[in-house]
Amino acid sequence: MISQYLISVLAGWGAGAVTGIIGASAAAVIVPVLITFLDIPTFEAIGISLATDVVASLVAANTYRRNGNIDLKSGLQMAISAIVGAIIGSWISSYVPSARLGGFTGVAILLIGINFIRKPLHQRIQTIQEKHKNDPNISNVKRITSSILWGLLIGFIAGFVGAGGGVMILLILTLVLRYKIHVAVGTSVLIMAFTALSGAVSHALYAPIPWNLLAFAVVGGALGSKMAAIFANSVSEEKLSKIAGVAFILLGAMTIIDGIIS
Image 1 (cartoon, rainbow, N blue to C red):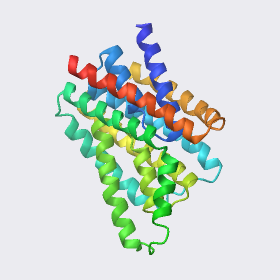
Image 2: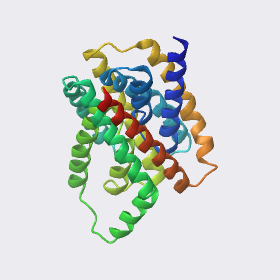
Image 3: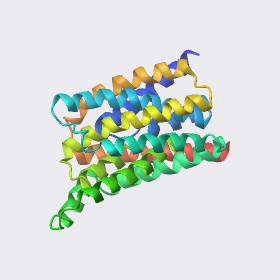
């Protein structure tokens, strides 16, 4: 019993660290750990990861808020549509067999890891912005429409596989809504908190969530997210991206293998 709580805390801490450093979702850490070591059904593991995402994201967002790096006004339509998408994704995932759902999650995490290793996120954004810097300004209608559609897609993925969508939200804020990178990171983490909350509540309605494990995971997530800010300031973004990439690949592969064995 004690080992279950310890694993939950460590999983939450790792998830919070990932969220605080690069704005990625808790699902990348919590879901494969809970499935592999505690044999938690995938749907319930996703619910725990989403709830942990809420706390870890709010802790990280508070740091960005103190530095004036959050602008939710322009991204409000994306936040609302992402919440709707998360509710739909959670509802659909409740009908998917646990092993198959775990496979979907594992593949998603694996692909995230490969992308982080191939090219750090901040370099990818800079390259695309440089390529399109001479493009004519996008109309407000097109920006709003794009943010709503992307918000629905990101929210759906969040509800379906438990990924809060922070990295994808970050890309849309920088490339479509033209946010500055620091403001985009802060705003994306805050939006992810709302998205994860709607997904977590939806999961709780469709299946019982082990609240004792959830409580320990949330505590770990808060601690990890807070500590991540200190670590992030001591290493380069490129190094952080590669470290996260390796971790995601290992966790994604672990989830896929466990799903095949099951």
